[in-house]
Amino acid sequence: MRYLTAGESHGPKLTTIIEGIPAGLTVSVDQINQELTRRQGGYGRGGRMKIETDQVEITAGIRHGKTLGSPIAMTIENKDWKNWTKVMSVTPVEDKIASQRRVAKPRPGHADLVGGMKYQHRDLRNVLERSSARETAVRVAIGALAKQLLASLEIEVASHVAVLGGIKATVPEVISVAEIKAKAAASEVRTVDPTVDEAMKKLIDETKKAGDTLGGVVEVRIENVPAGLGSYVQWDKKLDGKLAQAMLSINAFKGVEFGIGFDASMKPGSEVMDEITWNDTGFHRTTNHLGGFEGGMTNGEQIIVRGVKKPIPTLYKPLMSVDIDSKEPFKASVERSDSTAVPAAAVVAENVMATVIANELLEKFSSDTMEELQIAVKEYRERLLKF
Image (cartoon, rainbow, N blue to C red; front, side):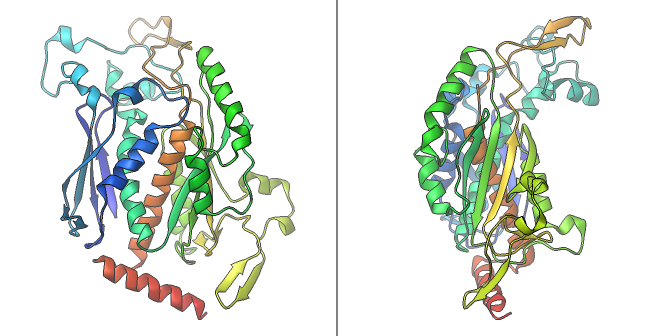
């Protein structure tokens, strides 16, 4: 499976073409739209979420509710486009119009300056429009499609906020995807620990008043993934490496870990490795410190992966920058922003991780049709039980 995305933050729409989804997958557009709604929610979101109500339009690759095996095209309209039709016009416009909303003061922490230097843009809007986290909307739509494929193979995915602004949620070492879904859905900050909800919301409110922003850590768990996805034979075939790269490809993500992650550096090996047991349902681990991976391959346990999201760099009390025209110091430009997007980032991470797992399954198993894929995965699971 492969895909590309296109579109600018204030352009007419976001677009993706996905190739490699088997024929015969039953697709619910409502489920895709539900994921888009989840991405727009969460305590601390800003003004744009009041403008956009994201809905996907599928224009190719699906007929009568089922995939055809041909490329799938999806778009998400940017409703704010009506206010930007001249500024973001595809066709040439007068210089006076072209200069409207020009950005010459790069914002620290954004792609603005480096992107302008790389592509020789004197209007940094040409950079920030594409580097915006708005692009994650269409990646969530792709992930929502991937999650429907995974569900047909009895693989489930969920996410929650583990840390927000330094406030850490208490997360049980063993918790099911179903429990995560239920608890996170009941929390405005998407935690599984209701004792920290109010403290997190209070901190978000205080930070917003101060004109500042907050980061955090999100956790994704994936259940019932068969052992043996990924490979140890080459560096670029390790599935945990693919997941890590995908996690860090999400806007503002700066770190990733599996299982107990960086805490492993503080423990002896006897407290890190997961002992192996066997019963009539196959091989199991007594713990899951390694987050479902050994040697770059899934080991059959629940996948546990966390991503670190930095605070949003757009601040309402702007940091100092330098005007690219005059080279004089100025306060950085301010685009509309959230005080925190960590709860929304959990939804993005969930869908991005689902996309990677779906792609790995399609790479490993024969998958021209869903029936073919389901039979192949079932036979593989049975073979693992007999090992």
